[in-house]
Image (cartoon, rainbow, N blue to C red; front, top):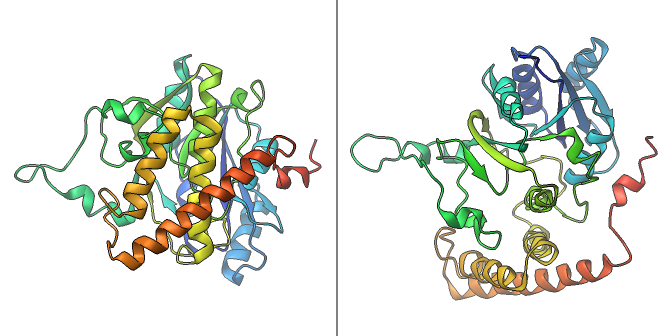
Length: 330
């Protein structure tokens, strides 16, 4: 097989040892043609990480870009503009992968209808859950995802890219393990929306929903798997998941995705499930159902909707690609 060049883009923000470990795993890949672009938004690294990045860059093993702002979609766009590969692959800065990981992604692009590949993700927090059983000692697995997983309104509550073991078409990928044909960005001009804030939850879902306009499919390959460590800090965003601002941006981003990409009925289904799961705490969220917690979440839900509505209305004259506008790369 004539293996295409893969550009691996790693956005990073205030990660130290996990970033070093990720790069170590990546540079062990048995793939013959790949480049690594580290889009670094950390102002001051620990000495060991700084020395590691300087050494790898000097040896030509990585391209290291240092920025003074923090935005996950902004970092993705920044990396894409500098990538040379036929395939653009995104991973997080806290992952572990087998040596055949890049080959598993690349082989799917032999099929002309495939424009993106969603890899399997083993979340550290879900690894134990992945070992739960249906009957006896058989690991819990999914063969075919339910039809709801292709419904843009409610897919996010059925799209399980942890336990699914059968390759199949999907509606979206997970941001820590996804790849795209280069022409998705060049020929079709798609960019990641930099208005997705905080941890940028749903920015990849928004991108994948817009990818439908190209006619390409997103193909899930469980062999293109990695372990996502899910570190508590860092990760190319500047908000703690425990902060009040995170709660606001969480709802803002969900509503923005819906307002941009869904029909009225699809929006109704998404917003209803969002309220049922994340506000009322019903499965699969299983949050606290104390009246105080529900009222608090309902307030953030409402504020998030109003904030997203303002963002959406503003988009008629402001595309919001503020970080891309700072980039004079030609």
